[in-house]
Image (cartoon, rainbow, N blue to C red; front, side, top):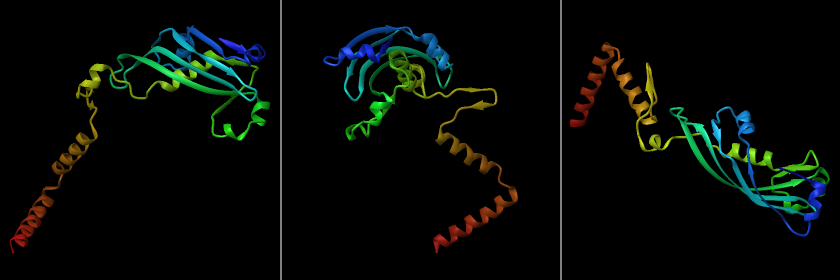
Amino acid sequence: MKWSLLELNKYKDEPCEFSETLNLKASLMKRDNLILDVSPVKATGILNVGKEEYLLHYKIDVIVTVPSSRSLAPVPLTLSIDVDEVFMTLEQYQQRDERLADEEIILLEKPTIDLDESVEDNILLSIPIQVLSEEEQTSQDMPKGNDWEVLSEEEYAQKRQEEAQQTMDPRLAKLSELFSETSDEDDKQ
């Protein structure tokens, strides 16, 4: 869904309300090849037209299926995202006042506001890096295969310590025993 800036001029006195169901599956899967499936996207909100900016506030409800970051099993993520965006033309941006100095402003390259593009961007930004299935979240088991396994940091440190002890030169082992005996004798005195 797109709004022309000329069309939006009729909403200067009252906000433009919208409630749309968008089919963005193909474009989202094209933009991110890890996405396995996307339900129809429900976007509901308002667009306020001001003299200095266009304020877009809406809520996205969607289910995005992505692979688990541990096992690659498909995991459906239910996303509910609140979005606030400020759009400005180049002229508005050059004349902006100080109250918008800290805001993130999206400059309009064309005389339209594209809801689909905004929704896609916000969905992609909301997908977490680590995605685990419910079973993986409750289980402490880590995946493993032929000659590889996933370890926690504590397990890795413990394994490194055990390997260091096992690979000690036998000649140095006798020397370390000698030092431990002398330190025991020093403690007794």
